[in-house]
Length: 421
Image 1 (tube, rainbow, N blue to C red):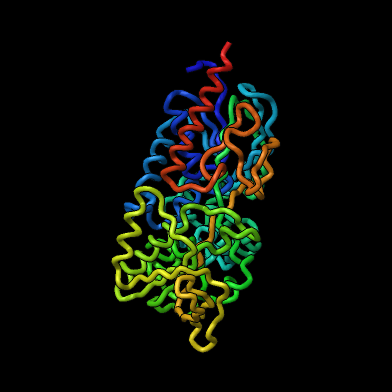
Image 2 (image 1 turned 90 degrees about the vertical axis):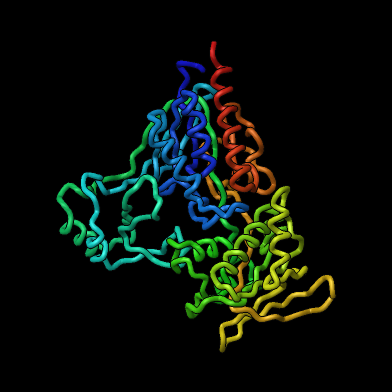
């Protein structure tokens, strides 16, 4: 390794960013890991289970957290952004903007203090399906482990309650954004993805009918630490969902929305159909699809589901969803492309399988990077010393993401070694 190499900057603290950081640090390179949220883990820690083994995200997440905590070569900045990058490979300069946390960390937060607050905010971790107070704990596995203050949610009254309920130096309201200048040798962009905005699908009822949810919301509903305590229920009345439809390619493979296939949505719906069968034993599920795409060894997962008499597959794209105003059930307008029949089945809950949209679309990167027609960063980027990883490059599952992040770390290291005179 190069003994005088500058640190590697990793932008994004999801599974790709965490993997790249630990892989580079464990062979002796300093790493600066920057994450815009208050915690590491990205979308992966919001999942209930991985496929095909159906193990919880804690399996891999806890290992990576331990590797980060034990490695002094990794410096983590949460609630932070990268504002500027200049220079060249081996000799970049970056400016980080770190948002104020207000909590000094000198004292633990007593939950009784939180209960005194009145202001509430949508819980982004649960995709807005429940609410938290202005002082909140992000989630059970959060790292860094600690409470977070949402200053915009706290009223002056709530701020006064906190000030009066905690030691004088527990909170510093004078904290402001801090700008930190760092010298770095290479950059890995692991900005991740976000769910496609289902409100853009005018005919499918999301945001109009309570019992139309998305696949990422379904993950949180099935999680024991989710908004429903692991029960898959109808948002309209809290009853267990016993007759559920999964609508595949909701906005995907559609030139008006996401023209590409995200490659993971079919497996996600099959996995979620299994959630439903495990939790509500007598439930029935219907999957409406264009094509079922299960890659490689994941094909067996699909064949196993075909053997379940309570799970049906209908080849046909759902054109529209309406609601029965009395029961709040959803009525689908769909043509079975095999029988050529136009059907209008009714369901208690509908899950829209929305695709993966790159965060790069709405992020202003510090350097000018070339994006492809879909908004993903092309390959190793057009700037030497800056590399992309995981879903910043293309839609991919967790396994592919970790492999790609390891490759990006290797490229960054090779860049630094190549710059040695």
